Length: 223
Image (cartoon, rainbow, N blue to C red; front, side, top):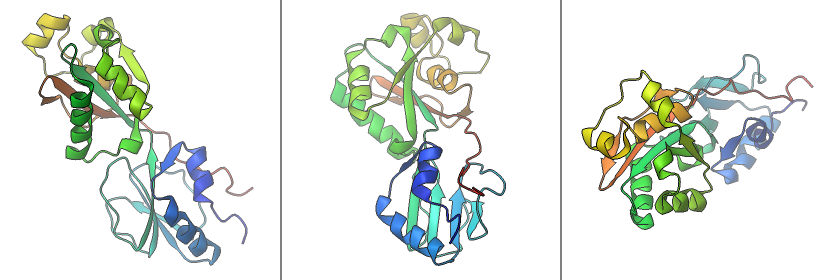
């Protein structure tokens, strides 16, 4: 059957992480057999990117078929017997912390933050913070363990940003800036969609923003 979409190839082309690789064989088998598959997506897909057997629908809707491909950066599930989860690198997390915070504590806050806000670890593209924290051992250890790049946001960019961050007098006194985690997430995401404001833990703050993702495509279509 010509032009059957291979979702492992689709994932690679669109820089998507595959979370449930064992389901790929069911999705592929259904498509080879000419059976319909639901593509439940929270992100835009190019018009006419897929053949009619791949039926695109919003992620929030119930899958119309037994086999589904789900594209989202949140951990909400799709109700279907077989679901292949694909994660775009769409999330940017801003982080702030007290000096010499224990790495294990920062990591626990990181995992708690993702869980509480239903954000997929696989969808985190990078962490972001301010220049004052560029050498903070706990932040560097977190980035190393989870293989996440760290972006340093310039103080001047935060000072010039017009977004109404939740300002903190304490943070202003210590850093000279009105915001650390929230401003870092926002600016490092290219002024993306704000998913959370500043979320406080003991000596730690996190915030999450979503980058704008280009419409997903399948280059093999029509070749």
